[in-house]
Every structure is written in C-alpha cells, then in structure tokens.
Image (tube, rainbow, N blue to C red):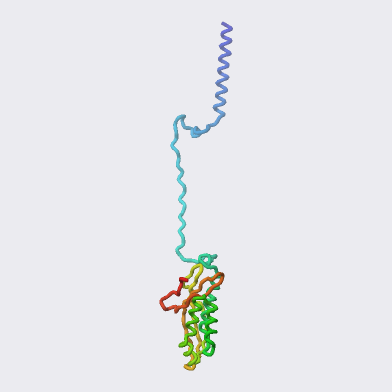
Length: 214
C-alpha cells in the first residue's frame, strides 16, 4: 500500500507540473492570426471595407491662354526655314513682276521673271509679257513701273506647296500720268528639288485660291 501511494503521489505531481507548464505557455503567448480580435474560434468576422476619401475633381480652365512654350511650326507641314524661303520667293517674284520699263527688251523682262518660276509657268509668263499688244501699249505710253510687295497671309499649305496672299504696290509713271496701283495676288510656290519655284499667280479676289495642283 505504501508503494502504491508513493506512485500515485508521483503521478499526481507530474500532472501538476504539466498543467503548470501549459498555463505558463497560454498566458505568455499573445493572440495571433485571426484570433487577434478575440473572436471565438470558428466565427468569422464580417470584413471591414475602407471608404476612400473623395478626391476633388480638377476643372480645366475654359479661358484660352497661350502656353509659355508653344512652337507653332511643330504643328505645320513645313519648318520655319522652309516657310520663310517660300514666302520670300513669292514676295521677290511679285516685286519683279511689277517692275519694268517701256524701253526694256520684253524678252529680258520675261527671262528675269522666268528665273523665279517653274519651266511651265515661265513659258506662260514669257507669252504674256512679250505679247505685242502689251508691249506696244507700254511703249506708246512710256510706262515705267516700280513694284514693291509684302506677304499678307498664308492661304494654303502642304509639305511641298504654299499659296500666299501677297500685296503689291506699283508706282507708275507714264505719259498718261502718274499713279499708285495696289493689287493682291495669290502666289503659289512649290518645291523643286531642294528649292522653291513660283508655280502660279492669280488675283487674290478672283474667287480662286491659286493653282494648287502641280
């Protein structure tokens, strides 16, 4: 009996030790995982949806303003240098077209104009400026004309063609009197290789844009 009581005492002591160890573990280990909220095992808490704060909508300005950096030529089919060359050719041609003398050889005048033009348009200019009726009129009235010109606007443009409205002022002296004649022309210039040539000349108010289909 004494031996049995001793073994029972040892077994009871062992159980006490095990329970003590388990108690220490449970009290020292904090809540973890999904049990952190203290919910009972097997019970799932409904998910909490976060509502983001409302972001104010930016309203774009409805007032037309010019940006600090704005390159108009990046939107055009021609560079600044190309457009400048075309416009300058149209201006110089229009000045030459309005500058002549009655005592000058009409062929020399036609050749001077043809130097600005395409071969086809140069031939048209030669026929016009050397026409006997025009030559005889200028000689009989002793017409002397000095022309100046200025580009007014761009009427049409592609990568190989520009039609410009060019204002012309001719100071004319003749036996019939002196006068200042003002005109506006639609001058079409086209690319020929790396250069520009005048392709057509029309009155700007004649209901035509100038010939733009070379």
